[in-house]
Length: 111
Length: 114
Image (cartoon, rainbow over all chains, first blue to last red):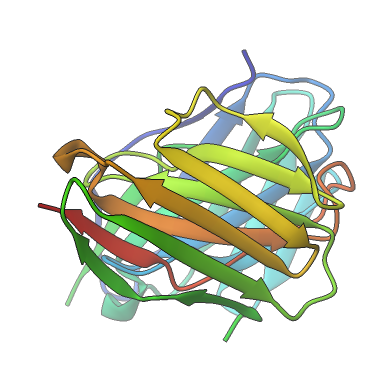
């Protein structure tokens, strides 16, 4: 069974700090990786996608992918209280399969 | 606004009622999905349609019946639901199921079964 694993948290960081969210996946042939943010009671919102090894930066967000170790991470610099949400990792495994989501990590940024 | 619209946003129904959830996407995508998200639980994939054909049914009870008349519209017909079916129902779309592209979600329908 293809799996995506995340620590459920909560992960608490002080305002202005770097929040580091991690995700591992089981299918070595996976090609596409995504991070979604979900506020309580709302739907998931795509914030980052990454397809090749290395780092991808977008504003305060950096996604990191290491296919050899089968993990993908999301760094949030200068964390703000408005970043408090659940962050979902999603992986498009090889073959004709839809996205597989992790259970999400709840992030709390303390002012 | 993600280009995926769900109606209604909130629904309260009795266990003997029949209702339908509607999803419409304006992104030109060919794949559409229904997910269920219960309180404090992860997203559960229910159904997948690719080019109007159902490609996945994740052992969903028959009281949930999907319909995909075209690539832009997706319905979830509900009948004789149970209180444990109360959840946030999310529709999503992507270019195709196997292209590795991202999925975009609608705002969801908060369903309460009484």
